[in-house]
Structure formats: structure tokens, C-alpha cells
Image (spheres, rainbow, N blue to C red):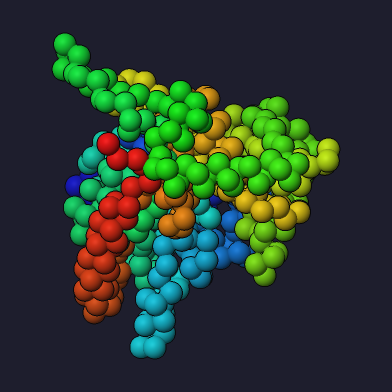
Length: 410
């Protein structure tokens, strides 16, 4: 940074200290933008009381400036615990404690409560991204922060982080692609570009691509929900009514309370989403005897395909039910969203963290990666050895899962 005297690093206590157009404009330049890194989303997390210092999320956003131009930025949080991250480092914290070394506060470059892979290190070019990583680590070291964790990062973020000496950690998620494996790929066009894979024409077309046992199981599960008298309706964006948002929150809150925890997100957060980012939300409501009994909320975003076009991506986020119906969770969280994705041409549905059971619904394993920097040399060496062993296990796990395709063969 010393040689880049015209570049100024500023650490901010709130996303509102950055102009929304500047932040969102930088996000739009990235290879893997998601709606969760938008200025409106991050602001809502803080202003609604969902991600605050009281809850263990103290914002210290790192930004790099060339005059009035925002060159690079990332959402940086000082954490007093490891909840709401979904990349589990409790064993690391325990090892620090056993040796009398403080692990908290640590720093995370992440979207609170959101295990969705995407850009974390926004930058105008590779050089700016590398400077951003350097600035974060230097600032954390100067503040006595134990470590930096870049969670669910994009490929660009990982490449830069690894180049700056951060250690990589891998995990597995399950995503569905709107690509029919039963339709042969089209040959390359005369200009050398490959034609995109064929998408499913209907949910029945999707079912036809699955192995017989998987297809039979899905039909049985859907039939149980229908025979229980449950129907579904969906609303998107501004068409989601305040009453529907209220009902959704009742379901969402109950799911957390049933597991003995208060919900991460407040009702005010979703009110702000309805006001500032309505286009990013799709709500399914299950009804029985004319009354709503369950709901699932899906986030929507657009992702560049590398050919100048955008592709619709759906992200499974939250669900809850006020009445128990056999297989209702699968219908609300997988089958209804997948059917919607097929009918509306979405290119991908990300089902969220963990869950091998998702493979039976044709959500296939993908690798998600985070990057880590530890200030303490001895602990950094120990964690590096651990990550090497863990990485071998994840690699083997992926190979095992990839050999269990839900699609019919031949």
C-alpha cells in the first residue's frame, strides 16, 4: 500500500457511509454478484437490528478509494462468536482458548446468516482486489484481531486470496441446474461458441430425466401433499402483500423457536426488503381449507453467463409451517421452486448449505470455498495442516457423491 499513495483505505462503521450507487455499481462489475451483497440488503441487516454489535456483528467495512472513485470494497465484520456463518470454526476457537490465546474478536468477510456463494471482494481489477486483501489483513493485525475469514467466496476472490497467502477451506453444497441431461449438447456454432444446454420444458420433463426410483419417490411425495388437500400459490416482488409477509414471518419465526433459538432476522428486515428490493423475492404459500399453513421464501438474482446475457438464479432461503403435513417441506422448499424455475427459465436453484437428501431431488454436489488468514504463526501452521487433511476428506466425499447421480443412465 505504501507505493500506492493515491489509493486511500477507509474503514467504515456502516454501509450507509458509502453511496448506494457507487457500491451497487461496483458489485455489478463482479463475476459472481448476488442480491445479498447489494447496498440495500446490507443496510437492511443493520438498520433492522438483525446484524448489529449487540448480536455479535460489528461492521467495519473496508473500502479503497482513488479520489472519489470506489476501487474496491468488502463487508467486514468483527465477530464475538461464530454463529450465523455456516463455515464452522468452533474447534479453532476452542484450541485458542485452551492455549490462553484470544480467538475473538475475529474478522469475517461475509454476508451475515447467508451461506450463498458469490463475490465478497468487490474490485475494479485484480490489482485492486489484491490490495483490498492486503489492507484487510494489515488493518486486522494492527487492531489485534486474531484472523480473517472470507466465507463462500467467488472464484475470483479465492484466486486472489490464495495469491496473498490465505489458506483455503472447502465444503459441499447442493445446486440444481436447469439443464436436461437427456438432450444431447448442441455442436459448436460456426463462430466457435457452444450452444447452451437444453433446459427442461416442464416439471414432467424434469422427472423423466431422473432414475425410476427417484422419479417414483418424488411423485409419491407430491401426491401425499395434494391428497392432504394442500394447494400452493406464489407471489413475486411488489405482488407479495403485507399480509403474506406477516404470515411468512410467523412461519419463519416458528421454525427457529422450535429449534430453541430466536430468529436471526427481524420482521423489520423483511419490511425493508419489501420496500427496497421487492424484485429479489419470490414467496410460496401453502393453503389448506382456504387458510395458509406454510410458506417458503426464495431469493432471485441475475448472474452473467459470460456471453453478455444474464441468467435468472433462485436461492432457497427460509421456510416454516404452522401445521404438519407429510412431505410438505419437500413440496414447499424444492418441488414448487423447481417447477417455478422451469416455467420461468431460471438457470439454477441453489438449495443452501448441507443436506445429502437434496441429491434425491436432483440438487447435485458443488464445492464451496472460503479463505482464511490467522495472525498467530503457530496456530496458522496447525490450521494449515488440518485444512490439508480436511480437504482430502472433502475431495473424497465429492467423488463419492458424484458417483450417486439421480439421473437415469443411457
